[in-house]
Length: 357
Image 1 (cartoon, helix red, strand yellow):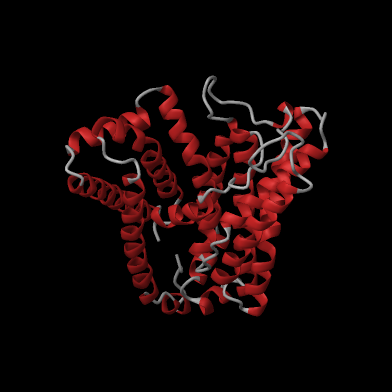
Image 2 (spheres, helix red, strand yellow):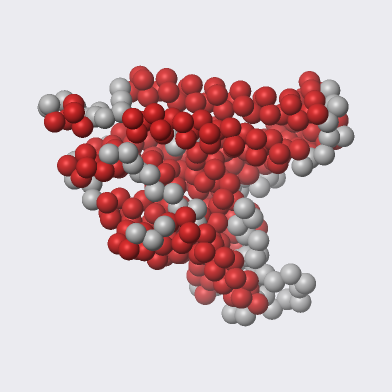
């Protein structure tokens, strides 16, 4: 696809998503018998009203964007892993365990050690489902969902045993991470940390991947396996590599949640971020710009809901319903676009010497 056409497609997708968002919110507010303009103003103020609100919105968007950017190559290749929830939790566990095992290490050691451990932990948790899908053709949706449950139970067991804090607490958690292992704040007085730069790097990496020959081959693999094979893309490699990248990105998000925000490991460290991140990737049309916009939209609905409730009395939970409507609509449009893509047959052009792009 020419670059100009690709950019036009991205813009149309973003415009559609924003239209769905606005329509969903206005509809729900009208059903709640509230003033739509006042409600939208409250939503905006809650998300962008002051410096702290803005940074909190960005904080909410960071893990969603990391998960979505990581899972996008797999989804573009027609592989549908939904194990980011468990991979995020295991990434947080391995990062926490690594950092606590090297107490006293300087920040120059503790920070990269925690980051690498989180990435490897998430990738390791994706390894078995990737292996099963690539070589035994076990459905990746089923296997990754099961791994999510195992990850939740393993995290809880570890927090009650080897990773349990020495303090007397009602909720299982780990000891606090050493100060040297915490990600420094990007904006003083807020929770926004330097880990947010990983989103920028991840978006840049996805742009490079999409524009590369190998990335094109993986995109073709989603709808034309034979053509992708002639381009040098092997099915096992496409499945295995993209699922490992997805797990690594989720593990990175887990490290960022522990070292950047909480400072300690809780059983609820994932908190639905993995599942929502996969949906954000679909909502963003699997493009870097779309994913960044979609993650910001979902964050706005989360942080702005409190301002919405304060200004209008509409329950903050209406934001969750708006998210569901938005994601459902976007998923239907995305599925329709994928079906149209499958009806195109570029093989004829390739066989006649044309450029598959």
